[in-house]
Amino acid sequence: MDVAEAVATRRAIRRFLNKPVDLQTIRRILDQARMSPSGCNFQPWHATVLTGEPLKALQAKMIASAPQDPIEFDFSAPNNVPHYLARLQTLGASMYGAMDVERDDKEGRGDFARQNIVSFGAPVLLLCHIERFMEPPQWADVGMWLQTVMLLLRGEGMDSCPQEWMSLYARLIKAEIGVPDEEQILFCGLAIGYRDPEPAVNNFERQRIPLDEQVRFDGWE
Image (tube, rainbow, N blue to C red):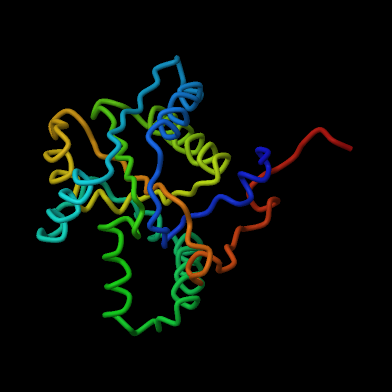
């Protein structure tokens, strides 16, 4: 798989096969991802990767607990701006529509949202955390690292789902994995595994705005 194909076929997977992931494959991917760019070569990302019993134990504690208040950070703040809210609503309509979950079906939507706790059945969960003193440029570096990891996973025939949703349980998660809350922020989880190709939630058409609405080109005739 070349890079362009990896970019085109990467998507947030929300149903995974019950298929284990080889440790050496994950180690190789994360070793390769060390070459991701970062300003001043700070390499500000940290991660804890769980599978098996440690992952099940964490998920059981989240199931038995309420989300924290306040959450670690507000990952949906831009929805206060109309055109960003419209993009969120378009995603929701496509995703829930694919699953035949109606807009007023609060129970169905809630049940699906809670699948985040078990990372949609993924056998591996990468938990990305960063030191609290890091600033927006370093957060951007972490994003580039995560994208590199996700594309390398596609190159190995695997898939992922980035889960900023995990910030709802950040303190619980950090306590479970031994990361000091006062020192680090939990940025996100990354569900890792092999996609189930059948469910509609893994196949609905993803909407992206036109290139010319985001990028301006100057200097060409």
